[in-house]
Amino acid sequence: MAIANFEEKLKKYAELVVKVGLNVQPGQKMIVRAMTNTAPLVREIAAVAYQLGSPLVTIVWVDEQVKKIRHQYAPRDSFAEYPAFLLDGIRKEIEEGAAFLQVAGLDPEALKGMDPEAVATSRSTFAKYRKAIGELQGQNAVQWTVVCPPTADWAKHVFPDKDKEEALEMLWEKIFTLCRVDQDDPVAVWQKHLADLAKRRKVLTDKAYTALHLRAPGTDLKVGLPAGHIWAGGGAKSAKNYDFVANIPTEEVFTLPHKDQTEGTVSSSKPLSYFGNMIENFSLTFSKGKVVKLSAERGEDVLRGMVETDDTAGFLGEVALLPHKSPISQSGVVFLNSLYDENASCHLALGSAYKFNLEGGPALSTEEFAKVGGNTSNIHVDFMFGTGELDVDGVKDDGTVEPVMRAGEWAFDV
Image (cartoon, rainbow, N blue to C red; front, side):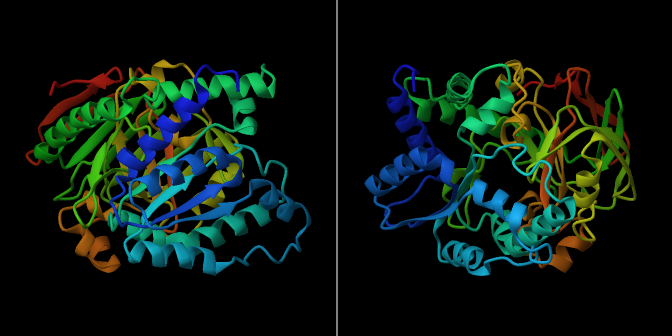
């Protein structure tokens, strides 16, 4: 790697993940689900965790090429099969208090050209078996973090006019900058950034809006918000009151919509890579909270399959706001990766809501959560709609309307 001081920056990245993302405590185990093509970073992460006093770092490896091979050659009726013990093992470690890290190095089109029915079955099977882990994350049962370090195949999609080596170096440079790893003390810089996000989410929580009205070219959507909703973003706290950051990088504040109170149409502003397939230039129309119409210039069958994953996949589970001038947006790069693209643009998520976004939510059963407006599904898929032309209004309980965002930027100071 020709990047100056690459090894030093990689170590700083690993320290950021363990110290700020997970905030691993002495004596706390770690469970990591990682793509094999991210191994150099994962090894550095393990080293940092052990040095901080973790007694055991367990890696569950996933190989994207083997997944592709399966889709090429496995019997067509075999895609409902899944090694449940792998996710059951992760769930058990989380339940026993292990911090949970996901390290993804996805090729946005790894499964391009594969049998769409097999891909859809494989996708829904994974979602079903992973659901219990998602519920634990939704309760912030332990510290958990998602990171996506660059890989050669991904980089080539982001910078298609470069050869793989140059594309990979360019993507690493971007990621180091956007994760603030290029700073002298990334941990200190992140603490200030998280404090700024905390101020923003407090203002929005205190406003207690009953709905948000989103307007942009192709978008006119009213999203109801349940009573007692809480805006989160940046830092969070686990059940044991340990600070952590769920996504690195992160620029958003977010909450849960009322699952039955979304009306209107939203249009995407960035492509969405979903389970190895691209979905581009799509729109969704909602009535009584549910998607009732959809279209896409590319990947419409994949979008439809996603919305039909289960009975509640077509309802919203998240609404997230961030300024168009965020560092990721200003980079001018479309990353074809939701972790980065969602932090460049206001976004929504189809599927499950996080219970921690509702006052008293983590203590509610699935049925109780649904009664107060929370959605539960096998999926949680973010998609981007924000632009520099987006206006957002907050609707108060008495019907008055306040500006929240104008032309993609915050309309209030903190």
